[in-house]
Image 1 (tube, rainbow, N blue to C red):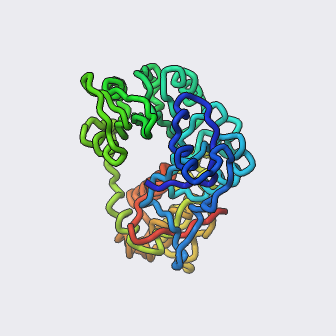
Image 2 (image 1 turned 90 degrees about the vertical axis):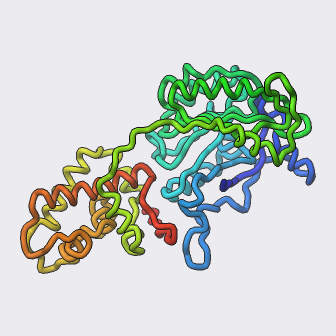
Image 3 (image 1 turned 135 degrees about the vertical axis):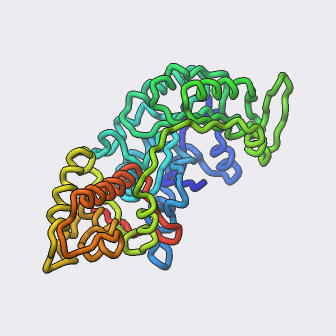
Length: 378
């Protein structure tokens, strides 16, 4: 678990905040937890090591944001736009934003949010029924791609089934409260939420028991280091069932990912926006047009230079998939030169381009562990 705290400090707004762990930690060192300040890790996702490779890579996903504050707290309004740019820029990272201030989200969104960033999951905290009924309608009505719910600390049994039925919630996490003054968490509450998730095919995770745990009518005091272990030992997590069609291009994409040069290409924010505005039907039409123009002929006197180098998603995909010229088509895809492409070959190339682009859009590219490509903010 990687945590990125661009700012630190928060103000309590609901019952779940009463025994906040951040307040307990700050109290030990005489720090004022209510003072919201920028941290030295403000630009953490942009830091690089000596080899100019990002310190955080896709292997570190997910990145949890503002765990010692709230991303949408009023005092951070002056910094948030800059952090949105960082999140947008690092499109290869997946960020999780946990908030009790979902009511402020709409006014805090960046101008290019539209339907949501593909690499951002908004996780709404609901510690009891009252907060669930107040916050979850806002979570469902605010435009975003990925939504989750967290009951932590879970203070009572909570009915969220009406919200799960909408089919917009991807996962629910439950957990008890830690610390000396922790309020008890009942295992029956956890199981009830789990049943709701399974019924509606929503992923479920039992994160931790909390310090005071009730099971089968018995009260248990559990040490901090055992709370997550005991939850894991319960073995009640549930992974939602999804139908994933096999990708016929996966093998060649894996092979391409082993090339440092081919792996260096990604869709820039500008290209991703273009795909969203145009839609995949138009992107597919443009792909056929580009393939016929840049690859379809029998001979190219300037073979190797006929594909433009710019931000456009089709041309970027052609370089990433080694379909930018006839020589590479022969080397990587065993499609010989010296003749016009057949319709089957054109269909194969377009399918490969669309598979690569779709993976980029969904934030699920095939990457090799040893390499993190440079990112282009333009």
